[in-house]
Image (cartoon, rainbow, N blue to C red; front, side, top):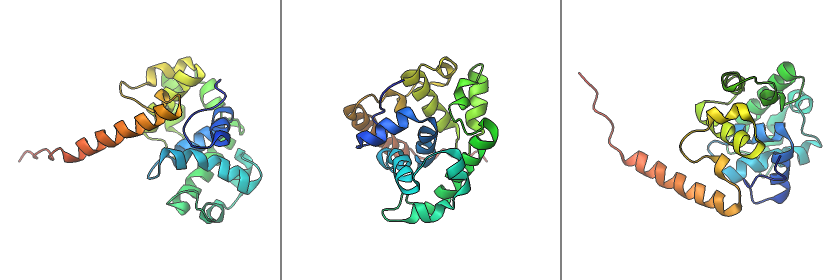
Length: 186
C-alpha cells in the first residue's frame, strides 16, 4: 500500500486517501465537475468538519450543511452531499462499513466491476480509473483487467505526473469537443 497518492496539493489529504479506503471512494465520488485536487481533498475536509470519516458517521449525518460550509467541499454541494451519504449507506449495509471489502472480497475482475458499478456515483469511467488505481498502486489483482489503455489517475505517482495527466486530459477534451457531430442516417 502506498503511503500517499499524489492527487491533491495537500500531503495530509494524499496520505488519507492512500490509507483510508472510504476516503478514496469518497474522493472518486466527488471527482466530477471539479478539479482532481478539489475532489480528493474533500475527504480530509469532511473528516475535519465531522471529526470522523467512517460509513456510520457519513450515513447518519445531514451532510448538505457540511458540504455548503465555506469553502464549499464541491461546486454542487447538495447533490454531492447526497451521493456521499448514499455511498456511506451502501458501504455500511453491504460491507459493514469496511470500504476495502469492495475490492478485497472480489474474487475476480467481473465481481470487482459489479461491486464498483453498484456504488452510488460510479459509472464506467470511474470504474476504470479506480480499477487502475487499485491495480497500479495497491496491487489488487482483480483490478488488472479493469485498467484501460488510456492514462488515468492510476498513472499518477507524483505531483508532476498529476500535472501531466491533467494537461493531457485538457488536450484530449478540447480535441473531442472540436470533432464534428456524426451525421445521423435518415
